[in-house]
Image 1 (cartoon, rainbow, N blue to C red):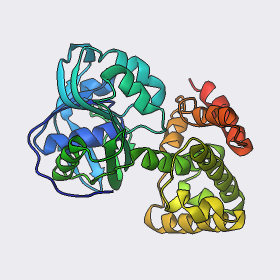
Image 2 (cartoon, rainbow, N blue to C red):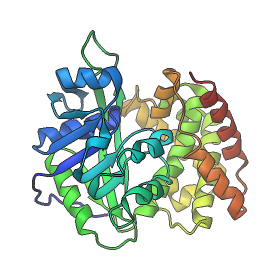
Image 3 (tube, rainbow, N blue to C red):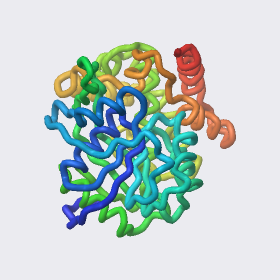
Image 4 (cartoon, helix red, strand yellow):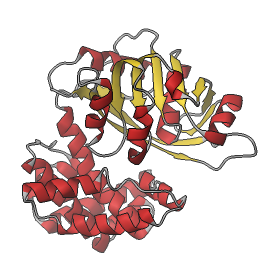
Length: 333
């Protein structure tokens, strides 16, 4: 993974989704002097147009950009960043088929997103990416739009789908860095995306099963065991799929290939660190459940489970969690 503060010029960004992630990217890039069109809907769109995007926490400021409610009217963008829930992707991208795009990447969860982008904008325009940024939409105040609590200022990692050096990825990295965001480039973005997904699969599953802040279900031995099994099963799917996982964190060789007891202890130790550093952090999927919204299941856990069946990988814990999360999602209003 490469990091640098490359020079950047003024760019035109279209950001799809005005939730926590989309708002953070839009606000930082607008403050950095770039032309930003943020696609939003309903009352939030109207409030953002009146008051701007409010960011609190790690960085506190308000920024203004163009708020777009009719994305089919957009004609050109240097960069498109997709930051909506995975189940809305196809419908949202369908409205952008007339958009001339230089580069598109998604900061959504899961590993299916790049195919959906490539189907609309072409493989050459599509980059892989993950976002380690964390935030939460706060309650609205009167006619003012809900502010965003920016709680985890992690990096955005970008890379070409075919591996190797990507000039476009490095240029975008420099632009993000100069706008106050952390960013890196990877020459094996598939490995990075799957490695993040391994951890996400276990954390998100347990967040819904327990409805607790992340650190609480990580430090408990019982829930840490379930998380470890989901992660290790997801990792087995990735490796059978031909992906070389990053040798770190929840995708490390020791975690994946060591004893289950060691994996549980590793998760508990991670929970103890979160208890100190991020005691109020809750997974984004739990935030959706609290608002009685659909969950990102079919395009994430269910996709991995389908791959597991096709590849002959046993994934009983993943299937168990996938089925329960599916019920919760279908019951949402």
